[in-house]
Length: 183
Ligand code: ZN
Image (cartoon, rainbow, N blue to C red):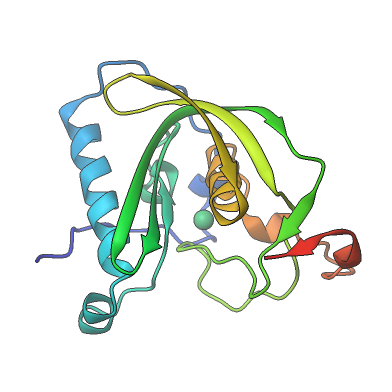
């Protein structure tokens, strides 16, 4: 298998701060190809055999803006079971509602655009209801929980030019930790 040529921008790049634009359908062939490339890349990055061989950083989500494309599209590849992956192609997502309960990822969030150790907790909703379109233009309304809820919120932030590091309190990186559940 060949690793797709996916060039990921680093957090220092100001493009990552741009608010991405709504996408209209049908998608262009080039956007469809980029979706495939991202999905393959994320999958390979989570399989030991490949991430070791190709020196990839494991990641479960990537937004178009991280490749410099200002469109409201992201892909999440979630390892449900051992080497069993679920792929979400998410276009023009909207948050419909969220739980009051907040969670944070115990080992800290990661981002393929942030190439450094970051300490602190990122508050996220434990559950969200969202609406989005897939690559064929079909509308989906879904409820996401736990890790997937966090991943969706992380990627939705990218579409608005927000990085996870922005959500960590600068003065007190572990602020309100006791009010949230660790996952
Ligand atoms: Zn990210």
